[in-house]
Image (cartoon, rainbow, N blue to C red; front, top):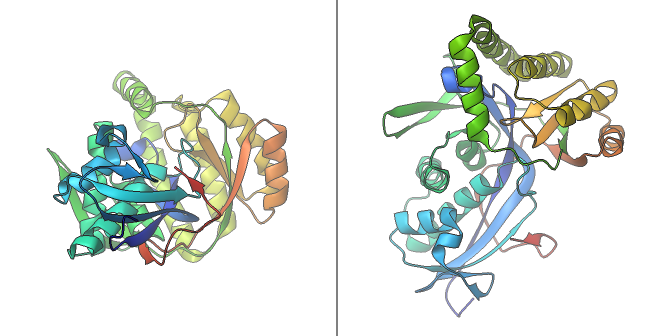
Length: 323
């Protein structure tokens, strides 16, 4: 890499398992790191070079944010990923977290997880105009991460603030579990769906009750994870999906994949903002769930939880896709 010393790092993808949309109103949300990772290798450069090609920094706003925050005008970066893009599995958050670690190590700066999580969150915010720290904190810390977690359930990791908003980020223990992610192939921007729920909540007390109930089932789900009770967690996931459907953020394609998964799963639900994107199913029969999802037109991916967070690497595996 241009004869310069290089640093390699990786970070896991993530999936939100409980609490979508209600987290906007101060309710808890839970995300789990998964065993699909983003890898990068960086060295110093006076310009932006990505996988051997010169590119304008603005083409990759997450990258430009991380290098600018660390006082660089450019880097030479090789990158590859196991995380499907536009699938709701945190590909951009994993990029930001792994790049922050690599750049900080290259510059001899602190590489504690909190500093990396804040770098990565800034990158997400700058690239998207708005963001929650749950994705980047999960990709940084690994395991299980929650926002708005009551005392006694999780252990506080750090507090992240931006403008007039602050978030308490907590960790909790997560066993290894197997999920199948079913991607619909539909891209649905988060902003309009969040706005749709806001308007529904403002004009209908019933919507407020649904949001409160999502908050309660999320807490129940966190306790089920702590007890390693997959049957209870699956039931809670399915209840959460029904509540999200009532809020109007599911769609026919997601419902088809959820329903197809249920005979072979403990439970299933959409993950992320909804309207398309992906669903997840907790299962001990991943092959059967994959087949059911494929038959309904979805793209299945088997993932496992209990994954380590951001870490240094010896290099980039040859068997992964370049970005």
